[in-house]
Image (cartoon, rainbow, N blue to C red; front, top):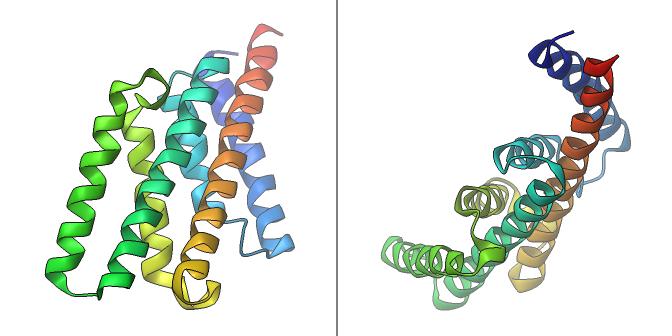
Length: 165
């Protein structure tokens, strides 16, 4: 079996099981869409142990930056101009941190940032108000992204075994 076919079969089966599990568990800290973002982020960072580390750390960093922007924005007062300022400053920090090798996977940091901001904008009320709610949103995203990175790592190993067989 060639690599692409192996990936398609393994990730298709694992993705179906992961979706079933997320729906069955029904936990607000297991977001299947964010799991798939983390999974893709793992492969985007080149896979293997290094890809896992780079992706997971960058996903976490992005979520932290988004949470910081959201906390600042909701503390200052939400207006369009303040939203632009908070996002702009936090993105500058997010990208400048890429000078550190551990935080150099800028796209994966953006995935963490965007998924955290999206969940806050779409479902903040479900996680609570204020700083506590924002932290719960970021935690839900980070947990899901990390699970996605883990599934990426596992799918890479299983695919490697299937393709060799």
